[in-house]
View 1 (spheres, helix red, strand yellow):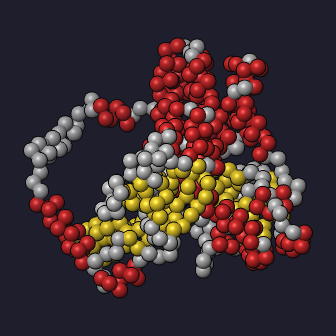
View 2 (view 1 turned 60 degrees about the vertical axis):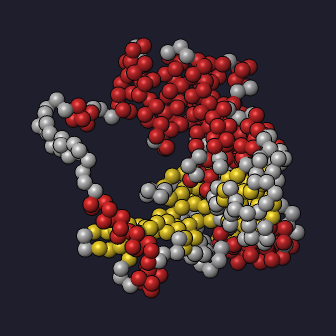
View 3 (view 1 turned 180 degrees about the horizontal axis):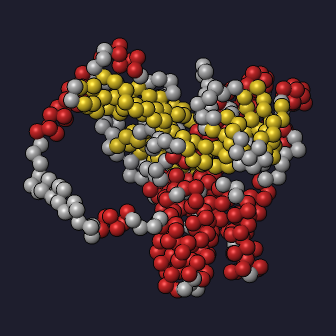
Length: 473
């Protein structure tokens, strides 16, 4: 980006910040470009650069002129009446409420003290304070579990069950079996054996236990099913089994991608960098998962799109990219399965960072992914969702755009659906016939979600999940 700016603008413009963003079609970067003026940096634009190097928008003189005009308008703006009137007033007041707030004990300490006291008034205080701790992603499950325990002590079993199920979903997302078993023990104590056996907490526990069953053979993994004996023998010759200690990194995001991995036993955490810095675990991968497919599908110098860390003692088969590519060339169906896996992982990463989808737990996101019917690219304008007909699909635009038209004509569209945006999810869920028709423009790639599967997902999901899906698009 800096080289491109030097070519077109000399030393007038400079790069100040680069942050990775997750897109349906792959990774992209948002680059903050500034005009380096003597009075300080003037913001010119945030430019998106995709994995092929294409930049949006293309910067020109108009962007620079507008940045200067914005700066002039801001500097000429008179302060609003009273805007600075109270600046510094009462600075020495010992009774300033803000100072009292700064001196308060941390919320977690106050919660622990209230629960330890155990009287109804203290427990009510803990109930009031605990939701403030839900913003800590790493501790969210433990906080929900504590909220359930408090509601049990306050004699509110209905609230307790709701918090307990939410905690169990968080523990299942991270495959934290000890914590999930504690949640199951509390659910059993509250409900009794018969009701517990039909509860969501019991289902999550059984699913997690089943998923942790180790593979006997590399070829038990779904991606390798159907390979001929000769191809199996050739791949097995190149496979190496590697054991990881808890917390050990297998690969780090941004490193060269050279191998394909298959989890034999244990758990691998997928960690993504946050745009604001740091990283967070978006899912755990259990035995049978295939990872590292960028090494065989990426162009040029492929890089790891996520960090992989062992969350417990784990065994992983490592296959060199060259051996996997040779197998893909010899077996077209195998190559297609690897390509499908990569696209699903891209969409999963996009979901994890999506403002709306990111609110859903991993199991629900997996259910939504399972509703994907196909991915299709269009070389010419194609009507993909007709008007005045109940849709049988919903759409997620990966590349290009959808144009929405009213009536019979193809004049100006009433709206355009851009990449990384959904269309028709609410219509598909509620069986609503749209009054407009959607046209895929040339060069557009769309992920189609089966409407019937989305409807069934909503029918068996709690109201908050349905509300999130209704907001998409």
